[in-house]
Length: 295
Image (cartoon, rainbow, N blue to C red; front, side):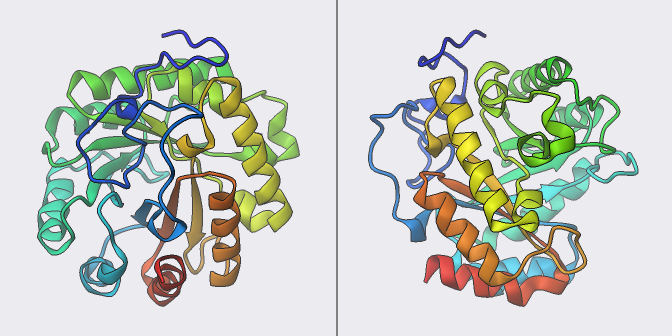
């Protein structure tokens, strides 16, 4: 698939009318600078991404977070996504979805996160069709095929997209973001616009939490770099999805106030999806952030 600058010819599955409720992400219309008006900030689609599932986290999504969830939001469920190289458990993914789905608003989507192309194939071949897509966690130490070489990375994302689409699932790339903002990784020349536009993925959900933890200035400049990289491949800022982390004990954990400020900046620049990564120790913090966002 080839993308000339300023022209979108990719297979981003959501670039055509997709039948999901508005607001949804990725945008259902063709991605272009002339797309219809974005949703108001309080309705910007969110991805609720629990670090690992236990009873308290399932209960939080079914009750505590429920008043804040809207059609177009997404729940990210994970299996086989740890740094230890564990195998994906399809039965567990299906079980968690079947438990959660009846309690959530119609139009809330589910995606399955994992690491490594072998696990991607396992999930694509076996998970239930209620999952909208598969999330490919691409970062150092999480999959055998990871490489900082950008040409290799493009190839792996192409393989990922083919596996997902062959089984009828959307392909959501989930790359780490250090090449955007870390001096030690910029030398590898990653271009996230190229990664989004030329590999067949339906969208990227970029792990930008490290930039948020580094500083507000780093977060803001990373958002601007992403916008420029996407624009060079004909993609608007509304195609960008970035992550914030509210997870006590996580090295990228930030405060509710900082997360809200970063959210407001990203949305103000036209970003139209934010991933919220959290754990069971931070349920109250996530609720507070959701209240600010959806207030």
